[in-house]
Image (cartoon, rainbow, N blue to C red; front, side, top):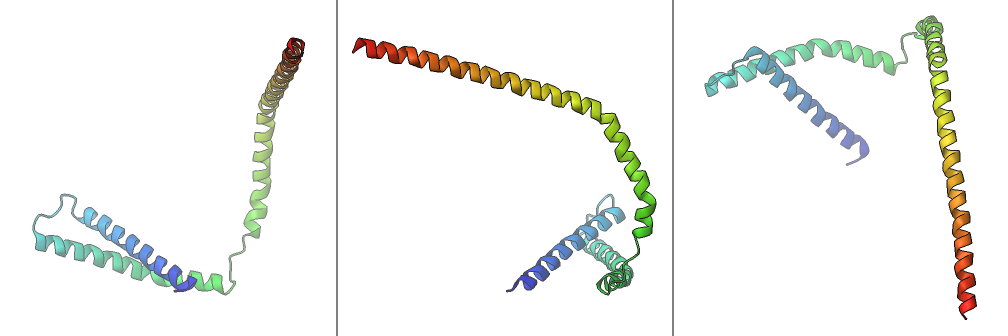
Length: 144
């Protein structure tokens, strides 16, 4: 089976799962106490499934039209909304940056200082290790 077939199969399984969940929610909504009699329970599930089907049937044309519009390139014009909201968004970002900058700068300074200290400690320990290794090597040569 090709990729498209697997995608369709996955979509059908996902759709069936969502439908089953919707029927279950509707059944629980209609029968909060539950139903004891098996025949009454079957009828209640059938009623819930019918309600979910009717709801989906009402929504389907709207969704089909929306998908058709998108497929045909008839997208809503969002540029006006973007132009309208852009200054507000930029202002908020700028305010957050101004508010957080001093704290961030202090944290970066502390981190840089800590890294510098650790690097110096490492370098000092390496120097000490080299000195210790030279002493051990010198003593080994002296014993020979």
